[in-house]
Length: 216
Image 1 (cartoon, rainbow, N blue to C red):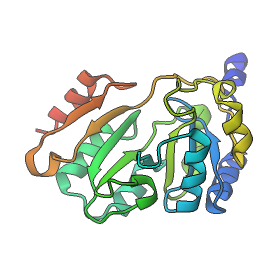
Image 2 (image 1 turned 135 degrees about the vertical axis):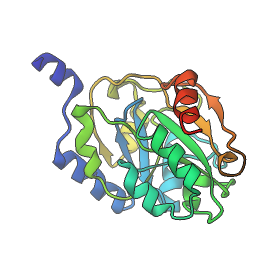
Image 3 (image 1 turned 120 degrees about the vertical axis):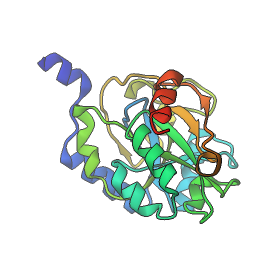
Image 4 (image 1 turned 90 degrees about the horizontal axis):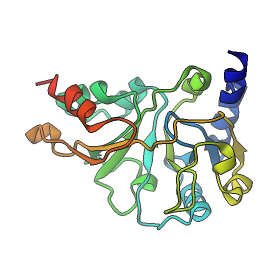
């Protein structure tokens, strides 16, 4: 058991505080999630977002997800969600899913980039050894910690050295599952109860269907 804990590298409250301080100060951080390693910054900080994009070589127009570490703050922040959308989010999150939502209030412009009326939302289902991150308050802008178009990182060593060296805070959570999040489009859900899986990842399409059809 102890060898497994060492492999997973238990994060501490101090690690969570380091991440919070980094993001609040306009920095860029590398962090473990429930899927792959990510790189993140304040979801409202355009200067930090530009730096993050430069580290990844990510096209400036491509959006990134907004991540909350627990679901309730996300539901409170997104106060204009339709009740059906709230139910769908509770069915899917926390989990290894990125949910696309209509964003009429155009929140988190730094993350949404050239599509301000769409918001990508992530609330990870953190394993026990990463659960200290649930104390991180507010929203971060997050995307995978790789060079754009290259493979995702399952371990910190697989995160390119240029990203690790360029980040202000680097957290090692050991080996992760390594499969990216499933992307579920809920932009038509409130009006038409339509949803689409745009990318099947860590959560199977059949599981998405089961969770959402249970709401009918």
